[in-house]
Image 1 (tube, helix red, strand yellow):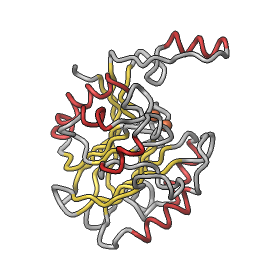
Image 2 (cartoon, helix red, strand yellow; image 1 turned 135 degrees about the vertical axis):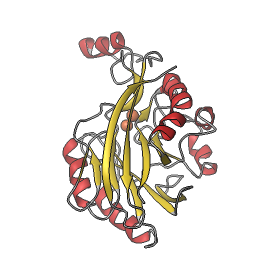
Image 3 (cartoon, helix red, strand yellow; image 1 turned 90 degrees about the vertical axis):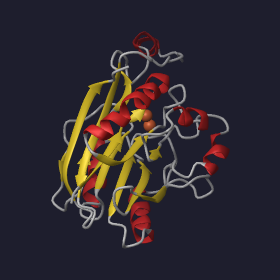
Length: 264
Ligand SMILES: [Fe+2]
Ligand SMILES: [Fe+2]
């Protein structure tokens, strides 16, 4: 019997939070998804996460929250993450950073799901360890009985994301790209049975630039001056994907990406 997993792209600000709160449970039901992963690195004011903002989408339609380069943007989240056992920070950072980069979680439908959060190095500012080496290490650490393994590869370059997907093809259930906030049209199953999409997209305003106010972003680009980039909280679009997979083999059979306006 195949299972379905819902993966939701970067949740941006209050509008994104409200959209997830109001729509994600219905999406789960509509697509019969027993498990849901959401990237929430932009959930607090567009940059970073707080326990309160994560609480805001509770009772959470997401079983596991992933993150990325903005994980520490909110003051105090380095302490808060210690008590949030379903929230991941990228795995390939210094081991001195708090939190976990991967975890194995119970799937209410069947068995367990491993979720790995990695961050890319191409066109990214963070100084991080090799995501490929880190993925290899983690796959050795995950118990062999856990076949369903989902990777959020939070990265800018499509080449790096495709390389990771092929590197892990046949060894994980899916490699799902995040970070660019723009959904790509390349969702597919690789030869070894791994589902892949270069980028899931975001939960953010349709009338924005990556979730930010258009005028502010244009001012920043045209003047080169620092500008406050306000988050737009209206006309929220939900970008997500549903992955169908066999929990016995861990191989994916289908990945369907979609982009819908939130019914607020
Ligand atoms: Fe990011
Ligand atoms: Fe993001």
